[in-house]
Amino acid sequence: MIKLIGTAYKRDDFTKDEFFDYWFDVHAPISAQLPGLRGYVVSEVVSKIGGELETEAFVEQWYDDEAAWDRASATEQAAAAWDDVGRYAKTTGSFWIVKEHVIVPPPDRGPGLASTWETGS
Image (cartoon, rainbow, N blue to C red; front, side, top):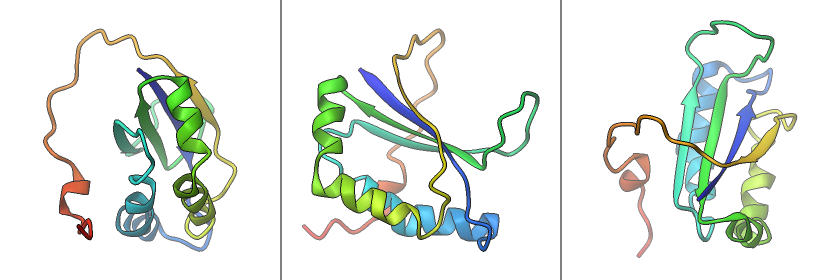
């Protein structure tokens, strides 16, 4: 598997709470519809320990491989997700495709927020 990881910055006219409320209530349900998406995590920065990078959050999305990411990024769902970003966030984030090397696996965290959204089916 590969992962897309990126930085996320709130727009200046949003509070931190407004930024995350919009992300979780509006943007995440749009992004979660990308075909081939195997996982989607938003990590809110609660404190900075060191370094020069400043960000409100990191976003992670897992795909089977780069070809799956390429297919997903070429869809209408991806276009809708990218179009929505400017409604709550700056569009200056940095993104990478990375390969994880798990040293200690994270604990199982349950079904996630997506399980609470209406799917329309």
